[in-house]
Image 1 (tube, rainbow, N blue to C red):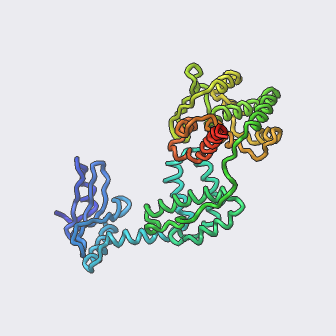
Image 2 (cartoon, rainbow, N blue to C red):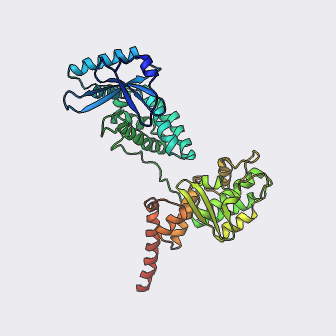
Image 3 (tube, one colour):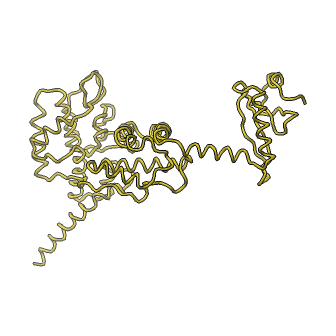
Amino acid sequence: MPKLIKSVIDSSLPKDKDYIVWDTEIKGFGCRIFPGGKKTYVFHYRAPVTRKYSYIKIGVHGNLTVDEARTKAKGLAFSVSSGVDVKAEKKQEIICEQKSMLFEDFWQIFTEKYIKEKHKPSTQKGNLSRIKNNILPFFRQKPIATIDRRDILSLQDSMSQTKHNFTKCLRLLSVAFHQAEIWEYRDKNSNPCRDVKGIPGRQMERFLSYEELLRLEGILAEQSFNGRSSSTYTVFAIRLLIYTGCRISEILTLKWDDINLNDSFIYLKDSKTGKRTIVLNESAKELIRSIPKKEDNPYVFCGKKLGEHLIDFQKTWQRIRKKANIPDVRIHDLRHSFASFALKKGVDLYTVSKLLGHKNIATTTRYAHLDIDHLKEATNKVAEVFG
């Protein structure tokens, strides 16, 4: 067999299976020819300690000349003869290089390989905002492998005025550092977020009382006929949130094709938890029938731009909640209130979980205390019998 030279490699044609054209001078040096035509320089050897056969890729023919590949193969052969496992050494060099990577550079990889692949667009938006505004400014120039628990606690101190936001940043960071371990940018079991707790904030669930609900519905009824198109759609959207307990994103992006009034349900192909069926009560059906439909727009709640859906209704909501004298109630609290009223009417937790579209009933257990309160009221009524 002739010495491995350019003319030999160029004349080596692809076959059904890949094969190697070996060099006659350097043992283990060759060029692998793939069925698709790709040609890669390789070096095969027996590991000095384990005595197992291994190989290392030198480079692609075309990117490297045969002389450049030969020079590298000579170096590898010398290292092996000196007792070095060259593949293990190269892997260790890569790991060391990865662990010296700055947080900023790692975060670009995490964003592309994890957030954009696994998170839904609505979740991506919030997480990318936290990365830009809170996480990157704090950790940008730190090597990913050196960040420890003290750094996370320092971030916690810096975000003490935005307690709920830190808790969300902590969850995101914990996932990121876990992935960093899997991808070998950090040592195993080194997650610095472990045992760091989110900052306790105000009780996140705010439930409307029956009196507050009546007051809110009265204000919404007034607002429905104020003649302002965008505000009118916003009011309809808020009312449907109250009647269904849906997520805000589910209502904003709702299309007429998603609705089946005859069978009393909405079918969403891509909700936060995947495909979801929302059962409509009579109040919701009556409301939907009253919503003006635009022929040039597929969405139920039309935005200001042609063919687009409503984007945001915080300004309208702030005005409405002020008039209803419930200034501390957020839009999402309407979903909590739906669950609260269901439990107070005797609906069990499992059914409430289905109504809210929770993937796991454990998510619904946050409302368990409401169920207990309902039972306490019931047992106190029974106690009245005994005097």
